[in-house]
Image 1 (cartoon, rainbow, N blue to C red):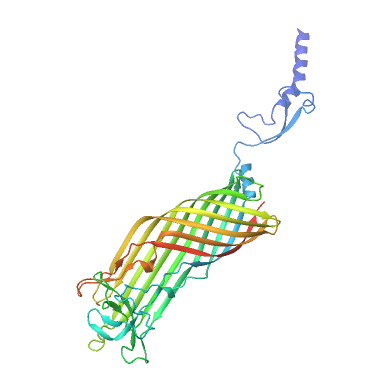
Image 2 (cartoon, one colour; image 1 turned 180 degrees about the horizontal axis):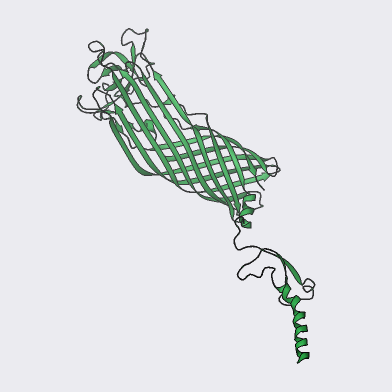
Length: 421
């Protein structure tokens, strides 16, 4: 019996080292400890594998608050940012006078032709010994506007995801027209700013809004937008010309306001104290959004690359428009408001060409030209129907026009791109 007990004790003492190696330093149930540990291979392998019987492991907790997935960190390290300076021109208005057309189209509403001037007529008082001058929309230029654009790109295994946003400085153009005396002619030598009106929907030479004390017209335009695109890898890389499809979503915001203001003394001989403070304001807010598709093509040689991008936006324009008038025919005339809000289809094309110089592996300089063109947009100066009611005692019928038109913006861009990898 003593021999059996002694043999069991000796065998147990021989197994103690193996048991100690198989256990962790902290043998608390249900807790996994961090640190470096040695672990014996569970089964023998080939001869070359048996040379390293112990493998070094680092045990981490199930959840680490600062752990970042390797794929996300690798993608962020290869991302890039791009900043552009924009010098754009917005679409000008056509060569049209503000107001309704007149009965005789040969009359020069600019006042420069002394033979074909239109006589000033007040709707309530009749003819005046003066002629009118009408402002022209062609005088409102929206050129050489500054802007900025920022882009963030994130490469992936299937392409590049880009997020972009831009903003153009507000364009504020104004024109001031003052009455003046033309000393060359002997009749109708006083020039008065005016806005021609329709007479109950009919073209007329005798219905207009006069500004005997001067008139001011201003047009303010704001443009900005953002988009997110997925640019796939080139379909046939390393062929000299890389072509990649583009799929994304875009939003364009175009807001415009036109304000006409001025004063008029309807009866300067009999009632010089009564002054009409004319006000006409038109607003047009375009919210264009929707999916877009396109294609990107580029070719490279030495440190230069030449490329272009073409994108087509299947846009939906959520329009908000309004026309507000005040004191057109009478000082007691209240404010008249005509407004509308509806949705229209607004397809938009975006074309850009660029030349890039890769100064280093991480920094690139580039210059390019952008062209944006769309249909189904609303412009404030073309949103007004200048009409008068049938009766002279009724308020004016200057109201909202729901006609839509094209819009374009184009210009140069220069900037730089920095890559993080």
